Image (cartoon, rainbow over all chains, first blue to last red; front, side, top):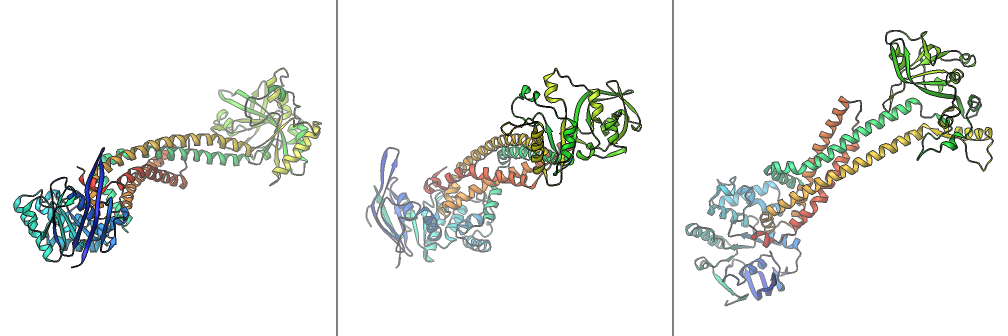
Length: 224
Length: 415
């Protein structure tokens, strides 16, 4: 299977006040097409930092990160923004929807930055919301939707620009167990349809859905 | 490329969500631009009417005087008083110069009170001149007749009045043929000049012109008074031939130097002025006012700009999460920067537009209730627009850069 992302000995050091934090200390990781990965680890293990670097929200202090054989770890902010827009979809624990926009406008947002015309933006966003079972909720604002519906809008937003990898950071963390299970089923289906999903969680139930679990501790991968 | 239109739409959405805040923010700009437009249009209106009036006096008249018409600093009375007086013959000789059409002697006094029966005119100018007075001053006699050569040489007790004197002293009857008493001399009114209106708020029709020969008799000069020696006596008003103003000035200077026996190493002992110089003085005065207004406006625009900057910083802080989300899904720094910049420019432009509108209304209102006439020019509107746009950009760039440079991870974590 083709490799999408390849991280080579990436480290991340940052300063928290006067304290030097070695968040990652040389991590090798590969994401292949149709992967269903879970990154686990206690807080402070560097799992968030790893996901930020993998999803190009952050750059490593050292090491190389390749995206489809292109070295992206030295890209500029501008280029990274384009990479995120084109390659990745994001699902956050707290949904991260813009409260003043309708579900449709929230979903269509990445398409704006992809430079897609309004008509097509609306069509594609409607279609994907329909697939998420929210066909009748497109013009609702986030405060008019339940937690599960909000997260499905967020997933629709992550999918709308047909990303190569979907990153989900504790996607069920703010949901009750029943809704959480529904969302996990949704992710399972996405992988079956050929999507690639990388998930961060500390919930073993959630992790059990994944085909591969990566455990992080003190900035290093424990076992593979 | 995301269209600017979409960003503008988004900006308006933000303003709609913060109506009061947006309104208060733009208030500084509104007041600044309003002041500029209102006052500039008043100055412009004043300029135009002054220019018109100077035209109507005849912008090409040359004044030959003992004292400088325009002076900077206190006058040197002794030096001016010691200069030789002009005499009516000077005017005759100047008239014969090739570039001169006609020149007249003029001598004048202000009379605090001129009475006819129960009516009274204040501060009437009593000018002594000759039969060419109207030609030089672009006047014509509306009723009755003008002065003629005989009146001058025979020193007749006759005079021509301006419409202000005519209307004040003779509200219900024709003044022609009536007699006025000036310092005990009875002067027969032979004509009335046409109306000229007011210049810088002063009526130009409040005068009586009599033969200069008569004037000398009525108002003998007080040789003891240095003021009278310096500022009394004749001046010569010269009308040059069309387009020959410069040559006429040279010829007059040469002639007068010769007549006063000045050798080449001596300075002129007379002054030559033109109405163009008067216009320049006037423009200098308004320029000072102009600069003062610009300074005041600049201050209020800076205050307005700081208001905009302040509110944009608040807006950036409030929308940190939004910025983080937008950056995560692919908004570039430039996109965020231009979004916030467009927002501040639109805020400033709205303020500018409202300011222009209120400024124009204010100018119209002042024109309606006062004698000041306002003239709004297109360049003022452009200026108001340009200034507010500049304020929007200048004070918007810092908050916008701050928004653009937010770290997406930190912005996403922001609560």
